[in-house]
Image 1 (cartoon, rainbow, N blue to C red):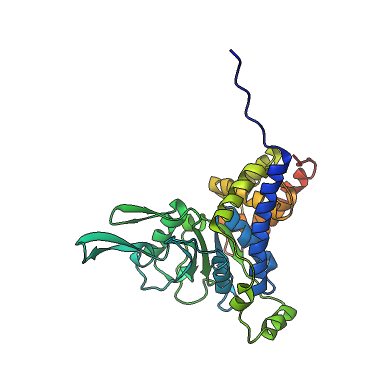
Image 2 (image 1 turned 90 degrees about the vertical axis):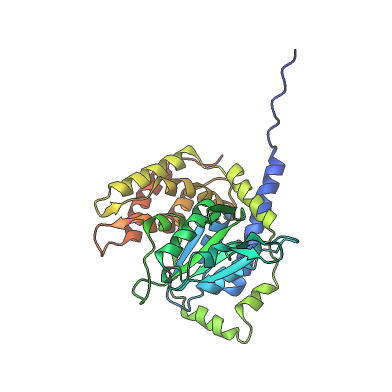
Length: 341
């Protein structure tokens, strides 16, 4: 009896075509966002990386810095699917009087059939903007945590699945603004990145005001959008075909363990941080035209990936600087290795 032939390996051309298609998706998203948002190219790249890596994003700055516009343009960059009941984009304005059912949905009585039916809340969308998330109560924040962690909501002891593409962009005002609730550590840990949006420069602000009377959404509207299926395929492609070398994985583990042992910190990153780091690194490598993760990807993503997962021992600790010290040592070790597949 002849033994069955082994499965054929992917030849170079189809894999390269998949990688190029995924890059095209990322580039279309970046072009739309850059058309609407001035002076935020680094932030835009992180947001696109997070979407491709299936991770949520927390944006922090004072009102008026472009956080809401960025999230809205990203959501509206996804074409609605014909016949789908899932919206491409929904915005939730978090306020102190919000209750969990306002975001998850509720069970109501259908007067025509006299049956109880579930009416979906705004979480049933591809991209959800959770605006000013730290202005709502811990009870509502915990309802959002389930959605972020499990891609599902539970209402009246019934579980309802969210869309596979479900992606949260939350905005947060700094905690010295009155009427805010600190996010608990478990919820912070569910965000892939925390991005602090620094003020843009004078030339960029001049570009913003020179666009009047055109609006940011109008400027982005003429550019090509992406389909849900394209985004899901891009996610699968980077996971299957962008190589994360063993030495990169070892370096990440050592980096996290070094942070946990740092006397300036009471708490270091969780193991989850290591797991979610891998697709994020692969997504950044893809955006930069590589099919393998390089040390520069680790350096670029370490601070937004890890700093918000740390608990400082003193109030004046600079978490970003602490991460920077440790990642610099990790990068020195990685520089001695060849990571190309």
